[in-house]
Length: 338
Image 1 (cartoon, rainbow, N blue to C red):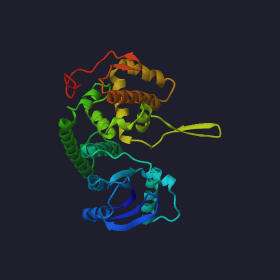
Image 2: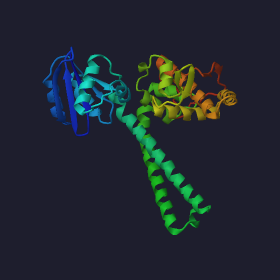
Image 3: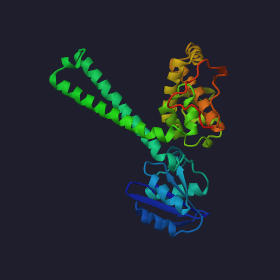
Image 4: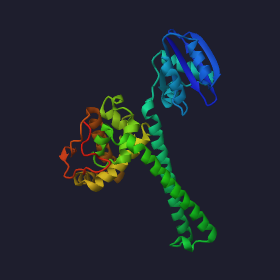
């Protein structure tokens, strides 16, 4: 069995290959050419594992190596850095370190999203960036009105009105792009059985369902509901030392799932009396943000069980039957797929 560490950059890729006992087999710095990289791995036949750190450019490498029979792993950059500190750090050393960690089964792996969901997930993330820019344009206009203490754009100086006009045009274009993305994704995702199951959960609408499905990729990668809720950033991290316990926010996990479930919590609190009562009871003892996070956590638990058991939502929240159910209205179908 051969083990290769890959230090991938935009224009170059550094490879280091070791055998089963850790002896060096080959090292190379190559251009990021499919033909050249393919030739390197073809020159080392037999069972072969490889690992590349999670960067923004690993897609093409996966599409190249996996069909060749290479067992490619995606290393978690943050945790690799924590266990492989080196005073001298070069691309060749990084690649060799990755190879040795892979040989010893010490690679902390990141999830390699399936090719079927890759483009859809990235397009949905692009939509979120467009929405952020849209909101930013609106806030700038509101800031200009406050800066000049006027109630209408017509009362602003001519050059400031020009800025507002440009911002308005940007918002119009961004809105059109957002709708175009939603129009493209809807027929691909709405009819799927998992999307239909999610759409009947309180607070989860079309975009939230799309986000949950694509960011999870496959629910089977989470052994327990605790693992899933932690991945969604819905539980605080803890640092226990010297008999003291400190809880704080953690950036480990998926920020897109956290955002989706918090948005779902706001809607669920707004429209479902039982969830609203739970939120208010928590808000009396905890900050409002924490109470909202507890609602989001319960919705994430519901999502986990619905997807892992392949069942329809049972209409309960914290063992209380919800008095309100979602109507059969697009994007929810009359007969959800089994």
